[in-house]
Length: 288
Ligand code: OGA
Ligand code: MN
Image 1 (cartoon, protein in one colour):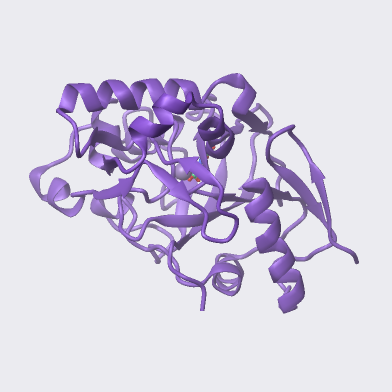
Image 2 (cartoon, protein in one colour; image 1 turned 90 degrees about the vertical axis):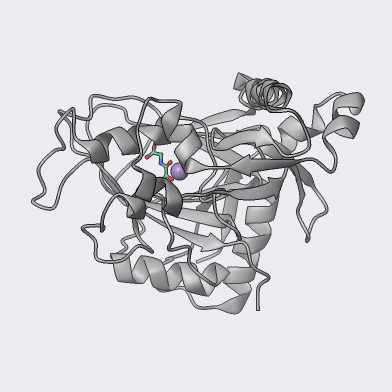
């Protein structure tokens, strides 16, 4: 089997063939996949049959330590028994579809906002690996946006203005914009984190905009002014030309770089159609 990368968009995203991720251990193949991540930001693989255990093991082999402090954990324990596997699905412990008013559903609807995973933590999430287990017959897609291309296209004076600025990212903030209420105890667990607004990939030197619906304010600016800047940057960065839409098939694994892209789930009738995916995210720590 030889590894091939087939671009799916003019700016980013490639489909990869010639590798079985649950079993791959070859350091040369893992290296080629990391180089592919730096180049494309999002890699799409079909027919990857993961269990939760093999998905966690692959994520560790590929990129090191796993993110396990999810926002959802502040609401209650996961039915999957580990916080390192995020339950990206619309069913409860008994496998029944979540009712329209279920608090877990309200919380999960936040994934329909443009975001990066675990930017409300420090260190933040680096790679997310989302495995499709059950996919509905209706379209229930995920969109990705290239934050490197969005950065490159900014006016030079905007680039100069935002260099060195920091944003506060909070999952409580993004959920509250949807009218979701957290208790005081939940809020305490979700204080958020501060990150640079512009990130530089240490291997390629490429810059990207690090914005998300979690970004609540710019540390160095008065709150309204910082929010307006964030809104402008979000609008710019999610223009059609930077966006790729992925239609899921069961067995797909998509890996994205949270420091170079944003993503969002697209609406579908989730109280009628079962959709079960599992996500494992690594932390942005230097690789051993
Ligand atoms: C995620 C996510 C969107 C979707 O898994 O982190 O945001 O379409 N998913 O399920
Ligand atoms: Mn996400």
